[in-house]
Amino acid sequence: MSLQVKICGLTQAEQAAQCAQLGADALGVIFYPPSPRHIDLVQATEIVQAAAETPVVGVFVNTSVEKIVHICQSAGIHWVQLHGAECPGVVAALQERGFRVIKVLRSLGVSLERDMGRYAHADGIMVEAGQGPLPGGNGSAWQWEEAQVVSSQRPLALAGGLNADNILKAAVSAQASLLDLSSGVEKSPGIKDLTQVEELLTKVQAYEATWEHGVIIR
Image 1 (cartoon, rainbow, N blue to C red):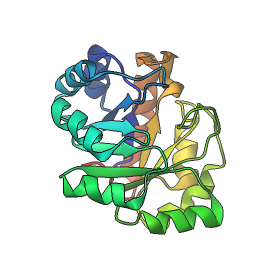
Image 2 (cartoon, rainbow, N blue to C red):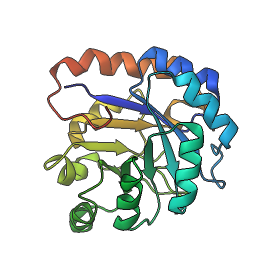
Image 3 (cartoon, rainbow, N blue to C red):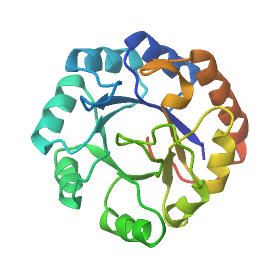
């Protein structure tokens, strides 16, 4: 099995195409106005087109199901990542509309195990325990091995403080299947450092031949 990498927070179609060509398994776009990486529907559509065969994941925070459906259907997005306090019913409602859903959990310990059970029907579980003013890891590293509560039972997506220097340590510590990076490969918010992207993808591609965990995004 492959260790997957998702490059999130893209704002430019050209960079999306370059990340896809470098071998990213998925790309992420953010629909959350307080975020400096927030994009509009026009930008999202351009990024989806530029990504070609590479899946694009739409990231939302406490957005209504109808608005998520409208944005994703308009842009051609099939994967949704829920980063807020969305209830399990929101996950199910989006799945009923044909979307695949990743639910982000920010809890650890007993709380993480409880929350994982509540969202067991999600297509993917991402653990992102970094602290900061906005939903997301905010570039903060944390004790990744605590996410093994999830990876011991199902494929795990991991985020929070990841970069080219620590990505393999994080993957091994958490036993992750997918690694989600944003600020760790940026020149400025929403503008990726493609040299760093290439460096980390090269590391992952060289390592993944021995990886035995499941795949999340197909």
